[in-house]
Image (cartoon, rainbow, N blue to C red):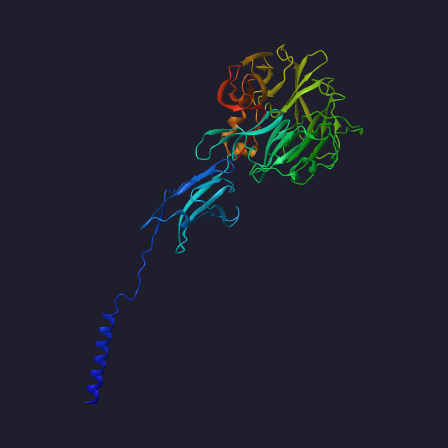
Length: 500
């Protein structure tokens, strides 16, 4: 009887619980969230460092009622995909529409838009990827001049396509901005380990940060010279595959350093074997051995060539050869190294009677071999302002105002190759690529053979008056073939190629 009572009591409790639950209706308040959807953001963006402005206008929609803008907050942020570039997280904007001048360092990032409903504190986000490139990654660096100020333009190789685009002034938005009285620009790459971009002006010379084209005061060459005396600014810097660096100043002082072993240019090397100081011309000749460079420089006062042995403290006299005396009694107008005849150096000289001469010599590990000497049989070369020597064919190019000539030393004739009329030739050269670059990219071998001409039109707005032209040079004095032309620069002073 007792057992039956317990069973009935249990059943009664269960029934009461069921009835109680069935009557518990409406005791909870259910809230439907007003979800936010973020659209019109692409999965991938590309932008160029310091050159582009990233613009993204997202579309915001809601699952129920529209929210006022005051009830929403926004945050755009970027996080690098790999460590080592920038900070862990960078806030780009707190506006709905992103308008951001690209200052993220080159690399790959995830960018996020976070939208917060400030009423109920719920947040929503959308992610995209951005690839930040640099317009200065590879291409021709063009040093130009406008109203006495230097600018650095770029014929930039696009990473996404094998095409070039023109940037008139890549330094416009960087710290360096302008260079007074520009003279030359140089690029060098040390076996792919590090690189240097050197810009020389009348009052200063400095190394530009190769990653971001910025400059800081401690990169001025005066901090690399122990002899920091007035009017001793670098006038010419010659780097030989970065294993030897020669510097000639306004005063004609000559310095040398091995960048792998030395941080500064120490004592001047412009002394002869008798200890007499001389004024060096802004040229350095060297041989095919770029690891232990024996150089030849020119004494402008005694009008003679002198040899600077590798890492020597002073220069030495060069014995006369069968073709000519190294004491020339002539003015040196141009001297450059070439691959012609196994690394001949070409020197163009002028005597007191305005007669021009060509000297050629080859610098070996122990001897200097004379390979050519003769007059230059051309009246057109009188008053020539720019010279260039083809690296393998040995043709000499020179410019007089708006006319371009090619001199064949074997035929002893000068042929007019171009006439630009009232325009002026302001730059003439062949670009020397590093041995590593030519080994890794065959296109560099092709570009090294092309004659580069800068032409300025004085009748045009000087902000965009100049053209840069690259010519293929055929053999046997045939006409030049225009390969590429880039317009819209100020007056062109110098050019070099940034390799990769």
